[in-house]
Length: 181
Image (tube, rainbow, N blue to C red; front, side):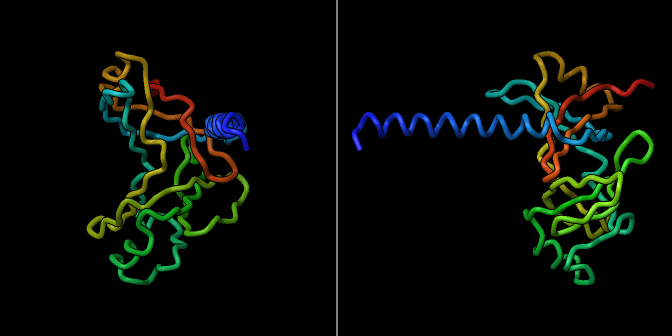
């Protein structure tokens, strides 16, 4: 293969890769189910990417007794459960309760859903033995905002995030807004 053809092929592959990354997020935003989540904001700043709001969610801390726990290691010592599942993909089933969606179960494999449910992919940060709760992340903990907006959102304790969740459990933040009292 000629050198020019190799270079052309490399450039095309890079472009396809970048379009695939953007297309994946666009697919989730366009076709994903809308899920409204109650948030807990913190305002950091990234010198390379600008101002953003770091978000925690009510579903980021899940009491083990408050949900259906379907992890295969249930019944084992909690410390062992954490070692088995830490940084692995878990699936949290959400159901709408009032205005917001709440966790109803946690799985280590893709769950079967009932009507009115969606699942979202999560990673176990750690298991808090003292509080008997899972601490999870969903990949939607950072939301970039225009310069100057972060401080305004930081001062608000009542925020909500409209998140789109596709049928594979991938989530993308569509908007973050202040809850109207």
